[in-house]
Image (cartoon, rainbow over all chains, first blue to last red; front, top):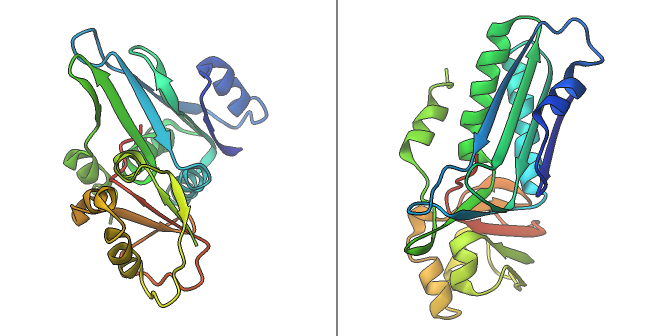
Length: 149
Length: 82
């Protein structure tokens, strides 16, 4: 099972993990990444996540397809939220399942690196000095580059 | 053709989408040159071209990509999800 969902609602990591693995007892490893909103009263008080409906889902599906060509995955799932989020809230979930841990762990890192530079999401943070759009980071580009061979 | 804008480009232009007659235009760059002449907001949105990304029919493209048979073209800044 390979699937992506873009939603404003929160997600339940335990329920998502169970749904991913329940039908396949050959799975021996699940790796997960959970991204949270980092912030405080004097830094980020809330954020607004905008995305490009349609293209976002296609971009995430393309990333999962790429991961499948590189690692022997049995299942993978991406859930990414949009809309207004507050510090401590979950933003993104990546789950990868395989027979052994190496493929699951590497594919999970690969998917997050690609998601950061290829999925059409934009963050606007609200803090003590008002709202500002987050700048893209050079380090995210180089994190993606490490997978090219 | 449907033209879409996201994030600070959308804010500077003051709308999220519009219909543009692209007759006579060949590439995304031709469309940008036309849009830049549509007012101050557009000028500001396309001020730093190195920060402008393009998608044609929801696939990543470049400014030199042909737009001939496209239904939808989107302009947006570098992505910051995750």
